[in-house]
Amino acid sequence: MSDKFTNNVRARLYKQGYQGFTKDDYTQAALAVECDDLNNPTKEQLSQAVDYLKLQGAISQLSVADEPVEEKFLTQVEAETELETGTLAVAPQDVGEMITKGASQMGVILSEQQINDIADSVDTSASTFDEIIEQVEAALLAYADFSANQVDAKIDQTLTRVQERVVNRHEQSRDKLSRGLTGISGALENSRNQTKSQLSGILTRLSAAQ
Image 1 (spheres, rainbow, N blue to C red):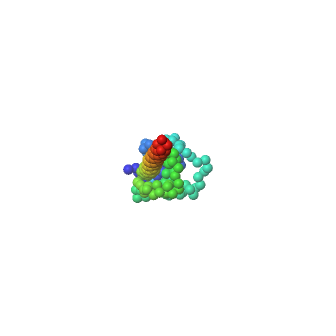
Image 2: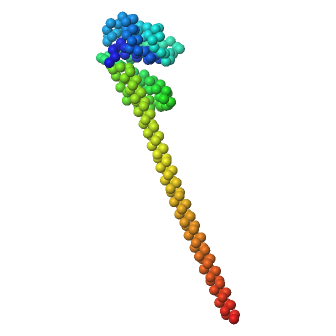
């Protein structure tokens, strides 16, 4: 299990768009800011560690906002990522942002309600930031599977309806052809009967004339 120093620094860096750091990077940062108790770091040590890792280039930058972040927002971020009693507190809106970013990378567009539904399945009181990221990923994959299953079900329903329609129309066409052939057969039979009747009448008149 990671210590509080590592969890807090990782969370702050992630919020600023940085990741790719290693355990050794955190160890060097802790030494640089003279943090002897990794499970009881001060806010100053955490801030100094974040700045240290940025300057050392020990991590890869994902994205950094061009506009300066207000002090009020920084204070809020620190409060949201502060570890208490061995757990990592992450604000719900941060989980929503992580879900939106992850869905975008998967090529999936989610509605606000869908994002909230997925966020509800994430335990924001996990002990490490990595666990929260893993939960977000698992929730997105589960949603993707659920959506794919719904699409598969709709495809199956459509194919079933098409097949039923084809069979039904085939039966209708067969019945129509059968009725048509029956009608033709009846018409031919009537024609033959009329012809016989006419011939019989002609023969009768010829016999009478003789």
